[in-house]
Image (cartoon, rainbow, N blue to C red; front, side):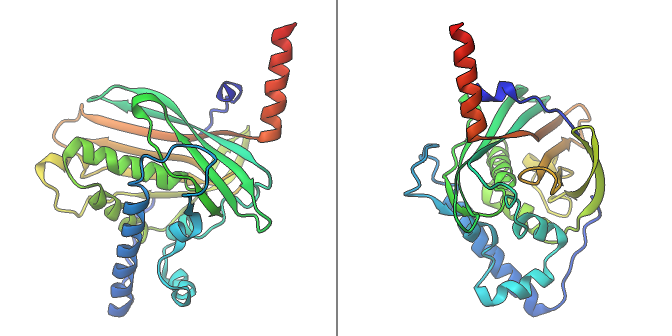
Length: 291
């Protein structure tokens, strides 16, 4: 498998709520409601297989940044947190100009469930003349596999949304709660979070990066069955020197009542290969096997 040829293993700030006016608050609530509907509808289509059939693909940019009508867009960007802009506005895929695959490693460590390591692949099938992308996904395998519909017109890297969506579904499965509630809290918290500038080690170099850190449930009245998520922390590390920008996404839970109860999940960038490179590697392996 292609993933075996990729072996790169490398390495928030306080919340700030911005309530400038009553009117902006109501607009934001309405827009978050719209995004909730978009997420809820799009990710319910679990039956769509990971293929290169884009007849039922989603419009990636409508999904990512349609916070309202076009006339509101520029004004909303002014009011958005820096985390919102980094995730939902910045063009993460702009440096990728030919069909490629971005590889990530997913690792789960848990005291309650089985630990496992898997792979996540973003397959950029086509690059349009305007540099938008057609994308399909392979998100884990076997019983851990999550199916996501393909996207067209993508400028941003959707892997963080896939991570949040899977996480919300997992919390729903474990608590009997509603995935929509968990998604909503995550989005609302991002909207009030600012980024932190940091440095990370990548490819034996020290590079500039952005860190987004937030805890969606600290001020939420949670029932006993979800109390272990009270201090759940999300950390996202991004850099424009990483293809696709997303370097690492991590969640960490430690139960306040039971210090031995913990869950940590990490998605980390492993590398990128163009389709041309993958074909050449496959051809080379095939020839070596013959000799």
